Image (cartoon, rainbow, N blue to C red; front, top):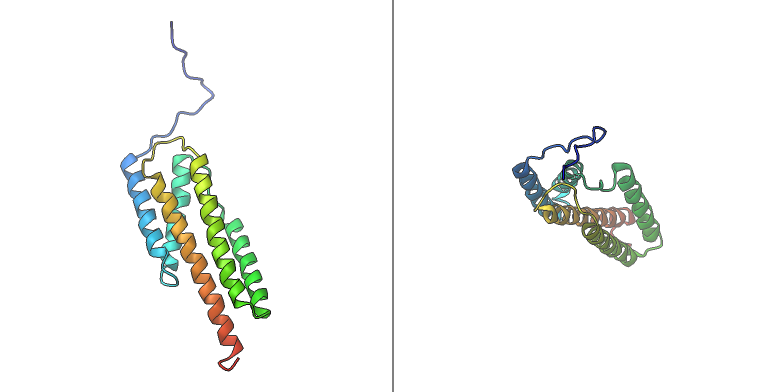
Length: 158
C-alpha cells in the first residue's frame, strides 16, 4: 500500500515556535491579572487583549471580537449606563456591570470548550483566563468611571 502524495493545492502548515507560543500565553495571563485591577490596569488589559488576538491568529483559532465590534458593544453599554443614571438608577448600572461580566465569562467558557486550535498550545487556557480577567477589569473600570463622572456632574449636594 502506497501513501498518497500531498495535494499540491493545499499550503503546508506554518511552523510555530512552541516556546514562544507558551511564553506569550503566560504573558497574556500576567497582563490579564494586572488588567483586572480597576483603573490602574487599563494599559495591561489592552495589552492582554492584543496578545490574545495575535495568539489566535498564530495558532489558527477563531479570532476574538474585532476592535469595531468591541467598540460598538462598549458604546452601547455606555449609552445604557448613561440613560440609567439619568433616571437615577445607579444600582442598575452596577447590575449592568455584573451582567456584562457574567455574560462575558459564560461566552468565553463556551468558546474555550468549543474551539480546538489546529496548532499545539498547551498554555491555551492561560490566554483565555488572561483575556477574561482583562475584560473584567475593563468593565469594572468603565463602571467606576461612569459612576464617578455621574456623581461629579450631579454635584455634592444631590
